[in-house]
Length: 273
View 1: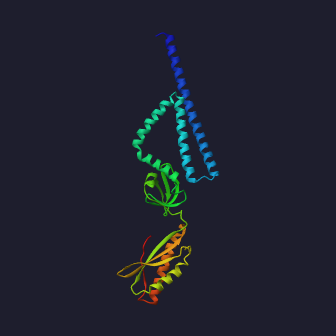
View 2: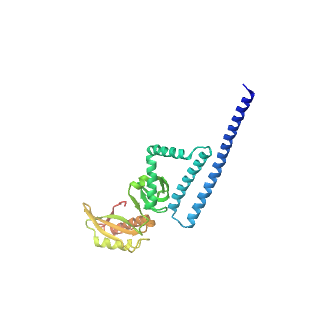
View 3: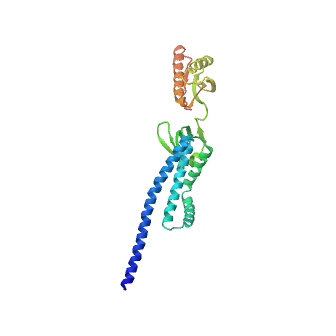
């Protein structure tokens, strides 16, 4: 083979290889610089929104969306660096989106539900709720899942689609909630006296609200006698303290009345609200 031809082939290959290497080096530099710029942009945006006192739930959602969007732009820029037409990439992305949408319909449903949760705002970060069969304090509302801490201190992740498709109970919105207890009375019990004593004592339980007033009423009758329902009202943070203290007062009243008049006493009926 003619040496000149070999030289030309080697020169062309070297030029091609050097061009590819330069693009690879440039892509690596662009990737690291781009990632650094994305991190800085996300951090600055997050800080600016917190300064403006935007809702933490909305901040988390917007920051996650911004991070995904900037990373997609970075990938498109990298592909452009290698000479790939972005229009072709857009068509490929659309086709991939259809395929992924069919395969990951549940994931996309969680994403859509997350968007509606942000728009409709049935609850916010820090509120005590019951969602998707889980009760606890909301820690984060993400693009796809909502994170809550249960009262027994277990971090629980719930898919947004499950949250949005089931009933949502928000215990933090209203100023107070009702604690409902009950007590079984003997047939011979002096009902007006029992009601008077219980109302007097339960009104002094810490954190029980005076308005609405505590209520002690006859709920129903059975073979043992009648059942009283006891309703106390308190702030959400004091629910369990009032619940336990209320049962303690009922038990103490039962003991005292049994000692004073053995034939007339309360029998505590432990009902969980």
